[in-house]
Image (cartoon, rainbow, N blue to C red; front, side, top):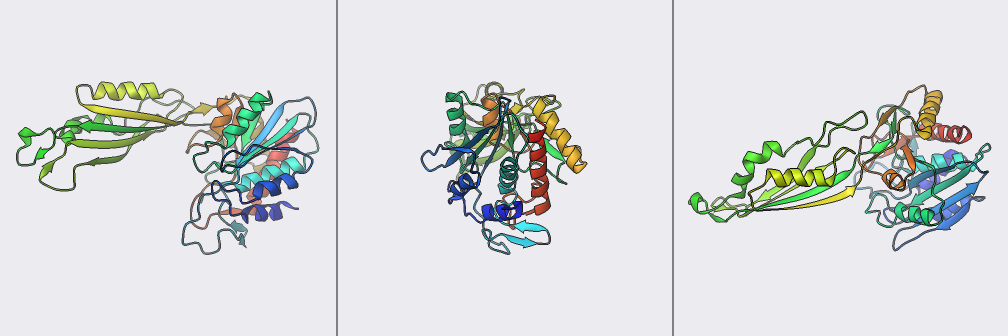
Length: 364
């Protein structure tokens, strides 16, 4: 099967999170010659493939076969891939069956490698991911078989293919702040305690606050307010409660404790409740590490684009590999239509990505 046929086949599976729709069974058969382990848990399907070529280092490729729901308004069936003007239209074309297709083909056709190659695939990355890639990494740790390096083939490029490699990701901390006052009649403000009045003088120190200045790898860790609600949508009642929600995409220079201390100090003297949840932890792989330099050099030689090293964007399963001490990078196709209507990807990008991965393996 050539890479175009493989891509079309993968895109035809209606694998909406956490359903793999049978795609992992197909991949297991397609990668005959690799040892296969299924690590399914609850409604999540996980597949580990590995093959030992020699005594060298362990390189892992990772990704997900699940996609977000297609939504309405497509110009074609999102699960019947449409080839048009060099593009392939389908849900998951960019995020991330393009990357999965590329590394499957690269690993299947490898001829010159002396270490261990493995592949980790899950059916739940777009959802909560509670029983996805993390379960495979736990299995690998228990077997003393964690990879030395990992490449996650998420779509990373912004303008042209090859322009961006992710060497890390910011963390994500969600916060809920509740401020309590005293409800009353709007005609008698002196008899009430309006939480809107209480919080207003502090907003310029809260909204958009940078907890650090960033560095060469990360932008500043900024507090972004996403929701404010108070009152009963009437004009004559002073509210007694205010709820504010926010998110901080944090670098390695700011943690949950820093945020908690800042807000507690800022709201000292008020009656409030703060709840923080760390959805993902930040990580960064050293710019001078073997995997970063090799992938950057290989991408430049294949595309004539010198990729920038970035930590922008949301979270991905790369963070899970980093938590287990695996040096991890990300490279994939352009991401201008991920999760969007009429998601599409150029076939040439998938072909070029496969060549980069294959050359990376051979030069490892």
